Image (cartoon, rainbow, N blue to C red; front, side):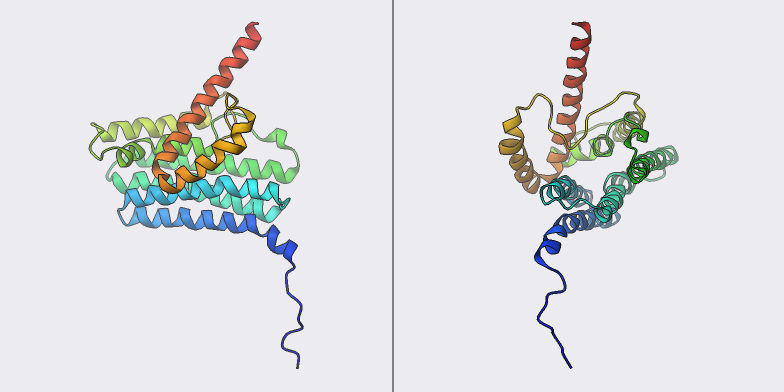
Amino acid sequence: MTIWSGKMPLDAKQLIKAVPSCITLASLCAACLSLISAFSNSPRLALSWLGYAWLLDCLDGRAARLLKAEGDLGRRLDALTDVVTYAIAPSFIIFSEIHDALVLEVCLLVYMSLVITKLAMYLGAHDLGNMSQYPLFGVPTPAAAGVILLVPIIENSIRQDLIANRLFWIYCSTILAIACLLAPVATLSFKSAPSFVPQYARSDIVIPLFILGTLWFPIQSMGLTTIVYFVSVAVNLSAKSNTRSG
């Protein structure tokens, strides 16, 4: 009886093409650990795991394009990971800190529903091969997650008791995140570099700094990335306005 034929079940090319999916699974694991930490009343740890999930989510797509390993499995894994990372985990981090606030709970359900619907529409449009059916309005889901987590990010980055009227500002950030998802303005991809950053900086400076910064300061990097995104949107809209007026 032959126990081992001497042939590997997977060749090197197949293993290399599995790397992006492995990164996506690692991102999903980090997002799940964020959920577990939120349930364990550890908001700082939950935010840190979520920051690592953001980092891995930014890297899996780049790895897939670099290795030419884009495929249906990776796309569906990425969509599942995005649901946990940008819809469920942020909502439960907020929910774990605020109790007996029915209106806020309803707002969080609305937020989760909008994020999941947006991701489902993207996946459906891609499956149909007609991305024109995907609505090009509203901020991307990572930016919305950064907005809804604004209060916990500030508190765990600077000082815990920094924000007065905490519940009021959490209501404001949640409603603002919902409004951003529904904003009737075409916006930039969250993973694309800002238009005002030089081309050489995108590959040589911005990405390595982003990776190192997130590894050392995962919570702060989420807040900074969200701010940079909205600044880039403002600059982009201002440039378009000047072009039309000119």
